[in-house]
Image (cartoon, rainbow, N blue to C red; front, side, top):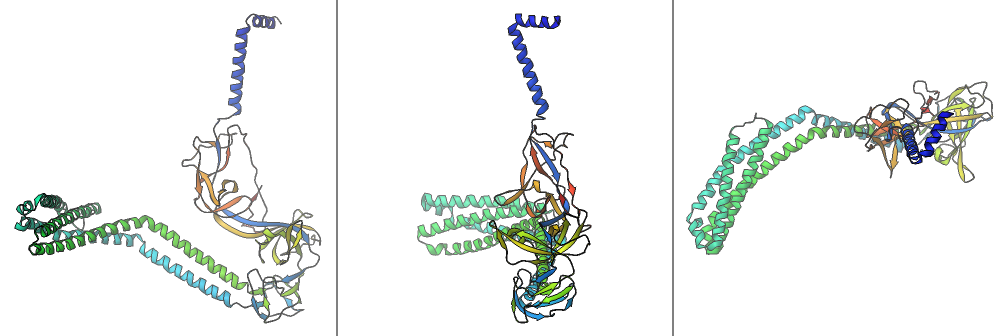
Length: 546
């Protein structure tokens, strides 16, 4: 008690000092609390690795087990035409897979033939590109370019010296001499001086060029040949300028003196020089262009190959789709059963809304309701996973066997009934039981995937966020890794997705690190738990579910 009295007495007698001390203590406490609760104060990023996996696209629905196992047969969406054959009659016993009806296949067969031709053309284009873009072929082409370039230089040198000599001799002629220029006044002198200066520039370049060319041959380093081709082009350009200036000088004297006949032969000779030198300029430029293009062909060949391979894959997919579409024109029994009725006959026109026949099956059937958006994504024959509220441990397989063509409207929402047959029976399943179904609309295995949270979309463009360098591993108990610089947006092309993951078609490669979540330093660490849904597909498996 005496201790606290002393403190109280001290504070009373030293109020100013005590207030300052209290402020300092509060400030330190506030600062310490902030440091403890704010973590590093940096933005942190939760990362994951793009990897190969399986994606299963599902459409979920619910309904009841039907008491009436009766199915109406209709062609699949997009199938229409004249009924070419009716192979059953009411009362017939049928087996699963048996062909019951055939619809005119003329157009579908043509589509298959066209797809086969497109695939053949794509394969031929790929084979041709493989031959053209093989390293041996590209190196051979480039070697030929250098031979042609060396030959272009050699041919040019055959005419450089003779042209220079010819220009020098012409400038020494009386009609083109210094006296002739002076007699024509200052303009004539200027023309003469310009022509002489251009000649000496070309001659100087030629002498150096000749020395450089003399020490190389066909087997020299490509870089040395490149240099000589470039040097020879510049020398030839200088000579072309000298010829032009001499031509200007000659034309001036011809017009100024009025003695056009005295200069006609000079003009003819100069015209010949111009044609010859321009030809060499064209050949040298062509050699440089060919070498540059074929050098660039090396890195671009891989991209061209990938593009052509993609075309082949697309053609294969188109053929597969066309063959599947053709098979849809043969209406087969989805299960064993008995034909109840056949309301159509050969020659009738049928489409996706036409009931061709009614089948009675001993298999159990469920009826579910889907909205107009989901029903547009499913098709007859697609596999289904079925579970039961009353039998939690039971999961069976089924398939879509009927989709109503006319929906019902409730509270402004259009719904369609879908019938699903069970592949197996179980004595515990009773009519009227509630069912939950997952219709498998697409399965892709061994594709590049990232979590759905990693994919963002803006203005119709999908992208993920990445860092150019790897971030440090997160500290235990703290969510994410810090980075002083923000991530970059990497545009990607996405494919199908499920509840957890999205397929990445292009823009990423396996092993790339992408951001799945951005958190601040004050955000508490969060632990997520992932479980797997049991799948009826065995090795394929279902996608993870939260």
